[in-house]
Length: 181
Image 1 (tube, rainbow, N blue to C red):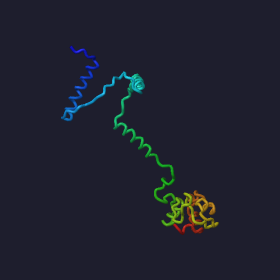
Image 2: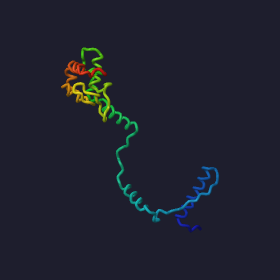
Image 3: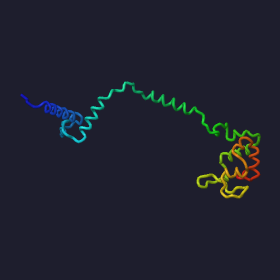
Image 4: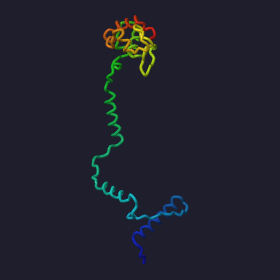
């Protein structure tokens, strides 16, 4: 009659099963060394893990069904489409073409020159301390003049380019700023 404890019996059964499994997988008999540690032994952090496990099992399960990948993709795609369909607020995007907001009855060269001046894409401009500047202000002679300085010297504003572009074009030609376009 076998008087071994139930824990010892289950341990020997587990070892026999592991031995059979390892020889089945590899096809060769290998010696496996296992260390049996009962769960009631004082292992550092074990009590904390047990407490967390008890807290986790005490919490109610989430009854809301989880979303499938296709549902998540569809929701994300709809949000993106709503965002993309909102027209941009900047006035550049309202133009039908480069210089399209000017709408002058003049040649393409003048329209291009005005568009480049308004957008700051002039060849004569260079970068100084991260800002676009003109080499020299044609009216007052200040070196490294910003576009705002040029406009204030000519007594123009950015709105003038939209309200009366022909006047702005004439001022830019007279001041010599259209030469390097």
